[in-house]
Image (cartoon, rainbow, N blue to C red; front, side, top):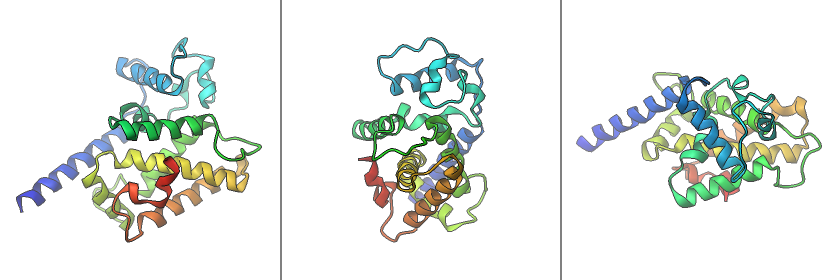
Length: 216
């Protein structure tokens, strides 16, 4: 009984932190936000100097302009945190390698029109937030209930499913040889695949999802 109560309190705290991340928007005047931007650049382009937080260099990552803050609809804690803060050595290696392959469009026969990497990451963030119904105070969907069970076992569950979603989206993009006008369709089919996999009987962790192997 005590363990159950402690587990429930732990889950509530993890969910509270996740909701807090959803509500933290980029503030260019905050030193910690500036540092997080620099950290994202460092893991993206190791050894390459960033000339400024406002620079044409950000376009290389897929931001639409030289100031990435103008593209942020949600804060970088969702977009960059899986790579920046992952403490598990093997996990960080797998995520970072997948991150680099996606950024550099190294997987498969590339499409004639490539999606902007950073903007795609922001859209994937919102897609997952909606899929998991994270704004709701109580679970309203079975998908949400499944995710909460996974979150109770792994506080990085959201970050892992974000990484899986990105590689699934990239794979579907290539299979369709998609264009700009099809981006939302690819995002919808990505969500549908994630939902199917999360509802599989033998999926008890994000690592059990069939598409998790795309990260390896």
